[in-house]
Image (cartoon, rainbow, N blue to C red):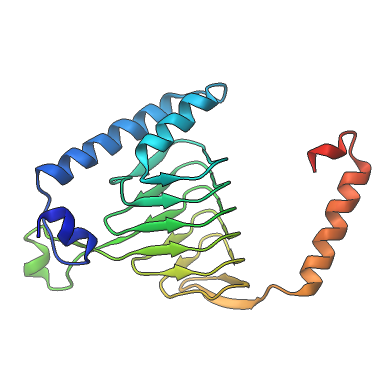
Amino acid sequence: MNAKELQLNGKLYRLDAELLAAHRNAVRLTGLIGETSETEGERRRELIRELFAEVGEGVWIDPPLHCDYGINTHIGKHFYCNYDCAFLDCGQIVIGDDVMFGPKVGLYAVNHPIDPAVRATGVEYGRPITIGSRVWIGGGTTVCPGVTIGDDVVIGAGSVVVKDIPSGVVAAGNPCRVIRKVTEEDTKYWQEEIALARALSDDPALF
């Protein structure tokens, strides 16, 4: 297998010319994204689509964004990414629909050998990260290699997610742990709040 095949199969690999070129292209594209203004929405979306392997409709990213390759990241519809996030996509990163990231969220789908002598050779390996749909990840959160986060999850700010998180929960901490389930009471409360906001707003169509 070549270096890219080793990378995507979770095996130890070393950068070759193909991966280095892909990384340099990601650095170029994230730099161009960072140069776009808030009024250049279509230009920014074009660059985002060029950077990533797959991008759904309604995606918005506030720069700066940092990314190792981009070509190993798949993003669903209506994704919002706040400032200064980092996607180290040496393994596959898959993000579902209607996902929100706070600022400084890091997805680290890369790892290094524990043995210091092997690590010193410069090899590394990837582990996939999967994030379900309708997930909100709070600012400053780190998602570690090999983690899967289910659907309908809230991850509290500053968390370090080292193990899988099931669907339908609020989780937080270092290491990140499930705090409670998302309940019918939550749904009722927030449906009432949005109905009130709609009633009070000068432009209910915004809701």
